[in-house]
Length: 334
Image (cartoon, rainbow, N blue to C red; front, side, top):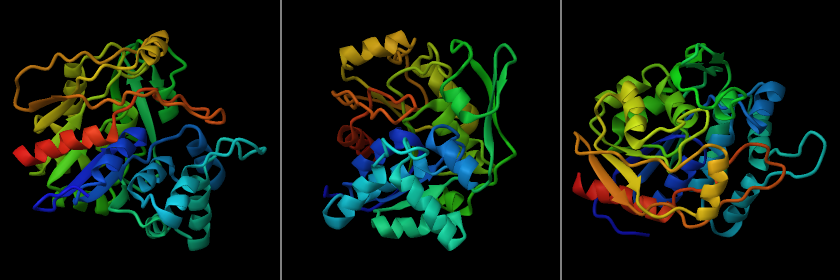
């Protein structure tokens, strides 16, 4: 456990592996951690959770639970079980145990919200995982040629020309904010935005009613973690400044710091990304109303996935420990 004289409240907003990485590093510090997680995911096992069980998506919640859970003893084994993805079985291949566990618990308790609260206790997590909304909604995106897609996974893995830029995203129907999420933002000392896909992990949270206004009015230190790579279908050829400009549409010019990676990225992974028209995000940030924290925060390794996982996953990710250090450096100078 790292020492720090005054405990503070840190809220991470996003979803997917990016928020997982940030939480896992920050867990080693004596802060109260909360994760506000998007509920608009509609791909992979989440699609089956929605279509077959009639529940809201749980994969991002599950990942945050795992990131904040105890990694030792019996709970450590349960943590591994929650991440286990079935590779065999008709109808079950590709599903994770954690998603099925929460689906079963929702049926037993008669409430998905209560199932999420009870899963916190089962995994003895350090902190709180908060669904941004309990509204059953879908993410829509409109592109520069007027084309509209109606589900999150069609934005994440586009069947159309991925060079097209998104001009508008919205939720339909409108999603009402979880009061617990608004309370966490109000009480936060630091709010961490990202890392993660800009349009499918981060912005869906900001589209929920009252979330953006709560962020804009919050007095917390706000830190945006810049993505390592551009994203085909979302941020094709985006620079760092392009990412920030999109984010400012939702939170205004209220960012206090932006964390930018300076570590070299794995060459073989970069070659694989290039085949998908994805490149390292160019750092073209200059002096502004925010500070730019440049630090080596990328992992030196390459992530692999099992065959039954049908979704496209990032090969290069931030390093949990290095990223946490960079974030803590912001708190010490704020």
